[in-house]
Image (cartoon, rainbow, N blue to C red; front, side):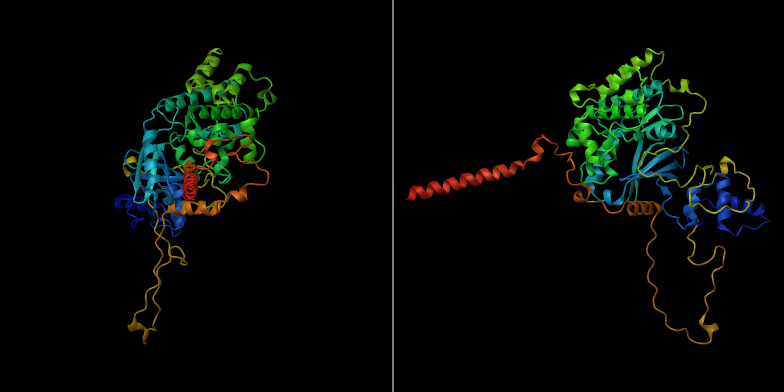
Length: 510
């Protein structure tokens, strides 16, 4: 802890002194007991202790922020709950993979998109506070939403009441309208990207940043299942050319999200990725009345129009969607954002934030260490000495433990090196020890673990089966992007003229 220089010496001395006094004036020999005592008084989180006891002491500090726990991971980032060390404000930090930021073009686009997202100021959009880097680690600082996403909410609690579903979608539409007015298209609207706070305020995630993921992983069959997870909510025109999708593609995806809230499943949940993409283009979604026979017909009509196959047949703006839903709610004496007034006892929304990511890390807990331990957690600890909680002035900062010497029990003293004078004989020559590999930060190890879990990216041939529909080449569709590039026609034209000229020259000489 001292070697990390992350804790003031006087703070550390007070904590250890108090701990020793409560343990018979000696520190516990078991490092787990020391770590548990730090968690008990709120100095460390379980996630921090797990990393520290594993010998990790690098990477807990990013610029002005202290990492508290791992929230989740996606194909393009790792996300952490963090705290500003001076302001004590909790934020969510998204860390970009090093192999992406080495590309200056990608990094420039990331900064441009982040700046655009930072200009958005709407209560229904997760705010972007800052973009920064700590050495080669680039990250974006965002608003932390203490709640859960709509996908998890419906999965755990079932379909929503009609008024609540209409309110939630209207709130997202309100945030979308603000973003669209600022010239941004989300292109990845889905239940997992809509966070609900404990006060039932819905906030849209990744506004302005989805373009980066899409540029790196276009929704084609050349990408794996994780990348294509949004196929259940993808507008027909977006599957054909995602770069030309406009604001009405967001309205289609929001309609599919509305459908999910009402029925508990996406419009086309069955089939392969390519089959689902084809259904979005050529089939009407099964009637909502099939799952909810008592559904209000006006609400079903609104949802169906949002999911119209042709963009011209949908509502033409997110503001229009919000207006229609607000009118429907007003007929029932409600208004958009009245969710807090309709609470029925427990809200059930106090779970982890950012569960939208493909594989959420269950490791860690809140700073008080109250959440249950995940599978594979440390064995139960022996009774801990009671340590008084420090005052605010004595609050301890993050203090990673020093690396444990491999193979040596905790608390054991280092063996003294035998000197040549004591040995009685010259020491045999020894081979030079290889230089130890540089320690990697915990963020680098998180990315490495994610890469090992994901495995190699399958090729298009491996993903596409015989007879599979290619979403970029649907039956009967022709487009300029599928033919030879223009320079081919130009080259052929010049070649034809050259041949004709040669033939004319030969004929003229005869």
